[in-house]
Structures are given as C-alpha cells and as structure tokens.
Amino acid sequence: MNVKGGCRCDNNPVRFEYNKKPFEVHYCLCTDCTDICGGALAVIAVLERNAFKITQGENKVANFDTKPTCHRRFCKECGCHMFLYVDAFPDHLLIHVPTLDRDQDIGEKPDRWVFVKSKHPTVTLPDDGLPRHPGWENSPNAG
Image (cartoon, rainbow, N blue to C red; front, side, top):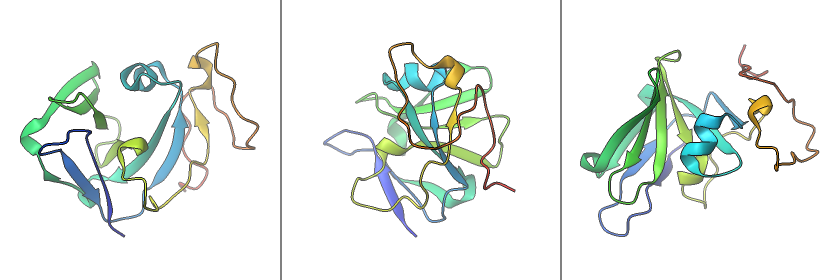
C-alpha cells in the first residue's frame, strides 16, 4: 500500500504518503474539524504515525492548535489543512481524506459518524446505515 496526497499548491506542493492501511476512517462532525475545513463534515483517516511521511515541501508545513491538545498542520502558502496530531492518540496521525489523491484506494471506508451532537443544524445526515455517536466513539473494528 502506498497512498499519496498533498496540498493544493501548483508550485512545490506539500506531498505526503502512507504505506499501511488506516487504523480506521470515520465521518467527523465536531466543530474543530468542520470549522477548520470549512465544510459540513470531515472525513478522517487515522494512521499509525510510523506509516506516514512527508515526501516534499516539509518547509511549507505550519501548525495551528485548535485546542491545546490538537495540533493541525496546513500549508503556509495555499492554506490547505492536511493532517493533525491529537495528544490523546500519541502513536497516530489523523489525515483529512480529501487531501489524498482521488485516484487511489485509501485502505478503508468510513465506518461511523462521530460528534453528531455538534452537527450544523442545516446538515441532514444520509440514511447510510452507519452508527451515529453524539461524541467520540472508537471504531467498532478497533478491538
């Protein structure tokens, strides 16, 4: 497995990759994720840190802490929010799936909705049969 992604810059984009199937993938409706990406939801893949590496443009990566324990990485030039570290999960990195190249299998499909209590009131969730959790909930496959 070799999944690649990056920022939106035309010149010297930040590029990264991971080489191991994600631990899990989920839809997140927390205000941190939705506010930072400017969307109604975020699709998040949780990876082992040692399976991830920046392959180009690392000098363009900046940090923004949306909470004292949540460290989000974005491109200083185009502003693309790519991935984050959460202190509660020191061995993992959370990547925003839309920053991955579209022509590849990312290794897993979303298995649940989390932080549905934080959902924006104008958003209607699809009838997709996936479990919905008011806050954080581990993947049903994580055990």
